[in-house]
Amino acid sequence: MVNPCLLPAAALGAALITIAAPSLPARAADGYPSRPLRIIVAFSPGGPTDLVARLLAQGLSESMGQQALVDNRPGAGGTVAGPIIARAAPDGHTLFTAANGEVAIAPHLYAKLPWNPATDIAPVSRVGVSQLLLVVPAASPAATVKDLIALARARPGTINFASSGTGSTAHLSAELLKALAGIDLVHVPYKGAGPALAELIAGQVQMLISGFASAWPYVRAGKLRALAVTGAARVGAAPDIPTLGETVPGYEVTSWYGVFVPARTPRPIVDRLNRELRTLIRRPDIAERLVAMGIEPEGNSPEAFAEQVRAETRRWARTVEQAGLQKQ
Image 1: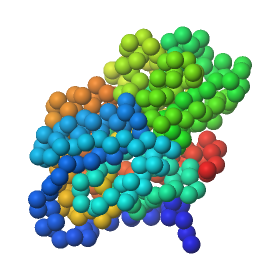
Image 2 (image 1 turned 45 degrees about the vertical axis):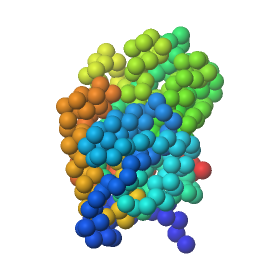
Image 3 (image 1 turned 60 degrees about the vertical axis):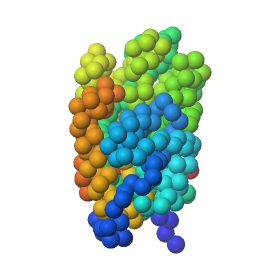
Image 4 (image 1 turned 30 degrees about the horizontal axis):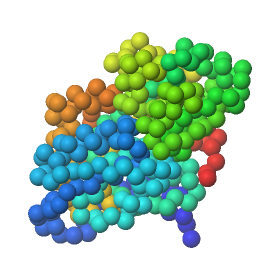
């Protein structure tokens, strides 16, 4: 029997596109929503995915006539939250705000996922894309990426890097840095960016690559030092911070955030949520808040989002291979 977690990218895309064929008639959307919305997040409060979810929850509560509540279910890089959304009723009242780690990376890292992103969820809209930030404690001897690499080479295996969980974008970003820079770092996973940042500030770990939204406030407050951003170009909000690729050629990582619903959710409900989210993302006040979090607002169709997930799944498969990681 074929493990569904090992489906090729083409199968993932085909499964995601199947939302175009609703399992219930159009009238299923009548009276929706009829009760509060539940937005599942795979990480602890305080991380970038959580911040995005809370921003969306506020807007959806205002526009849909029902309160939207964030439900944090951290653990194992999204493998705790995944089965919850997979088992939820496909009626549009349970949403999943996720990043690429839970959806496009985890299938390449876990041999036996307790859920299958390829068949258990359907895309609604991508919210936006963001760079990540490489940060160290304010008292760290590393003032630049070159310094950090030199320290790692001088003391291999003694520099611990935090992440928001095994299989998260933060985890894979650091693993890629290890591979491209040829350094030995030790992974210390947490149940979200919030706990990871707290431990970094306390000096319990030596570095972290985290979402810009969650790490930047601590940099501005002087509690952390930013060494680099992870994308191809510098960030407008912090133009003095170099990209990692300027020091480590070939390095480029971005993170996206999007909204999903359980598979087999009727298309009229998916369409209603898509309209609400796209309107919300394009509201000037919401867009400004996303930009302030280092996220470039998007908002697109379910089909376009499915294509993006398909492309990201292929890209992260190559990254996992490049980093030399084995499935757990």
